[in-house]
Amino acid sequence: MTASTNTDSAREVLARIIDTTQPATLVCCGAVAQEVAERWQSHKNDARIWRLDTGDPNAALPPTAVQDLALITDTLEHLPHGEGALLLGQLRNYGTHQIAVLVGDTPDWAFKDFIGLGFRRHAEIQGEAGTLTLYTYNLDTYNHKRAWNNPDNWANPEMWGKAWW
Image (cartoon, rainbow, N blue to C red; front, side, top):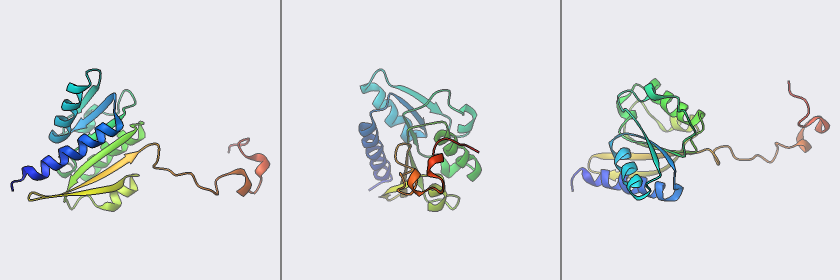
């Protein structure tokens, strides 16, 4: 089969993410992300799409409003690592609820880079053009509640929530 197998699978994965999240606002960066986002907008007319330039995606950041979903494809492989980290960090830090990144094999990006930014690895999409890895970030679930973080486990439980220093 041709390289389109990889891209078709990527489209299907991103389409499932959109179907699951049902975003009203969507940030997209990359050809595949933009194609899937536009298809979503054609079915949901009130959806707003914000397109970022793959050559300089940070030029349009930070976002002016909180976004429901960001899809990033065909971008991190072509940016210096610092620029890519800035892109993902700004989307995350300015409250984008969910982020999905498809990245191909590149020496600049490793599993630890995404984990360090709060992402989880979800899938690898195989194709003749290579492997794409799906990393996702979800604002609601990235920082799980810890059992020890409550007043019972503090040295001075009577001061819980009263003093900030």
